[in-house]
Image (cartoon, rainbow, N blue to C red; front, side, top):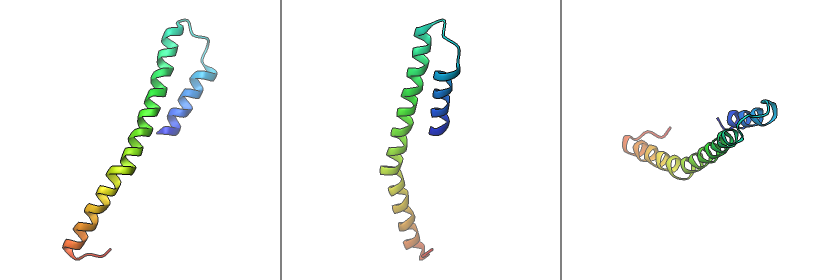
Amino acid sequence: MEEKLFDLKNIIIKYLPEPTDDRLSFKILDDLFTLEKDLNEHARMENLILIPKVEAMEFALKKLTGKND
């Protein structure tokens, strides 16, 4: 997802014709950069919080059921 968003920003910046409304163009690019930042923060939170919690839950469940896969 991050790669596609990066590509989209580059396409807009490099290849689209000169905008007729600079404010609208700036707003669109600003929103894309904000989305990119939010997605990166979301992924960071998943890695720091959610993934360790799920791994701990899986470990506890395996311990309860006696499975050691």
